[in-house]
Image (cartoon, rainbow, N blue to C red):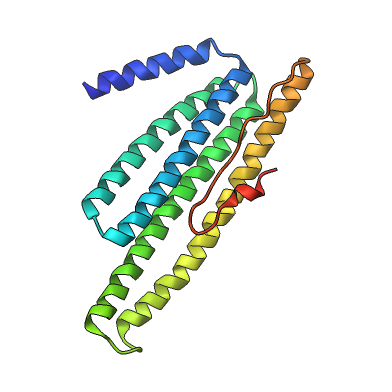
Length: 204
């Protein structure tokens, strides 16, 4: 039954877009972006819980759920992107850029989590077996920690680029309303990265 439900939802969304104005489509995009941000934060919080309780089943279920939810959001965003190609090509391109940046950020996030899991497992082994300072486990942990720093900085960089693109879209929307003599409240473009840093301060 699941494919039928998905198809019905897709048809519903396509119909919604057909009747939506360009600004309504952008409002839908910002709403989906908020949902994506919320799911990413849930993913990061769930991973922190996994590091504490080592419940692999719970973590795998979370990974499956997050991947499915983000995939569905991405499909809807692609439809918004395509629906704006002829009327507002610039908006469509910015949305595509954001989608690509989010994809790369998610790949980096999974890489970050793999490295942190590796560090956690090796640190536990060191504690259990009381290995000496210069052992291979210790060297491996140091190597992983260096990689974590690099990946963390990359995630920060991608988060900043996403914020810039969202701001660009926000200004485009404001210009659009000014051109037609209407005023619309600026959408919330809050993007949070919960890998030890909250970047919401970087919003303009």
